[in-house]
Length: 167
Image (cartoon, rainbow, N blue to C red; front, top):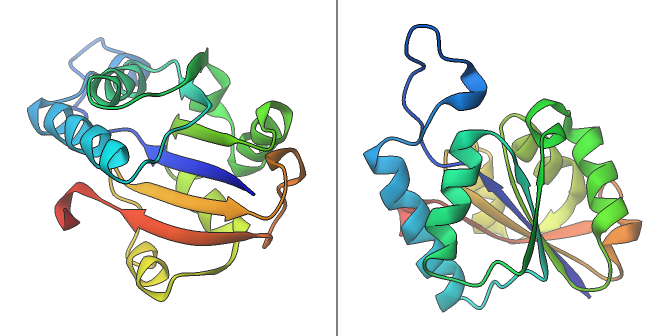
């Protein structure tokens, strides 16, 4: 069995004049939410073997908040997680996933689209929460019967869906 953790970056501030969207930092609530999700991941024993993190500033800062409270495994920063669509995310998962666990710190709508596409079945409460959208600092836990290298549409089970507002 393998697990995929899909985390949308924490809440970021608006871009200042002349600032690229890619460079937007977290706001104070985003920093707090990232730290909360790190503590929750530790408490639930959601520990990835590998983390793929968008190279956007808000994603990197989200990872820093998590890492202060839980183990994030080996980390790779990928600029493509900022620009890829859900299919691109899936290709990255297949290329970097094995029989263990993988955390993606990315962006919406990719995290939401991918979670929905991969989760053929799932916990009713988790599916209900996901139907209301994928908030910043939202975390989906999708488990697969085999290796993440074989992850495909509808083959995962949505085990849990967490957001800071529900903790």
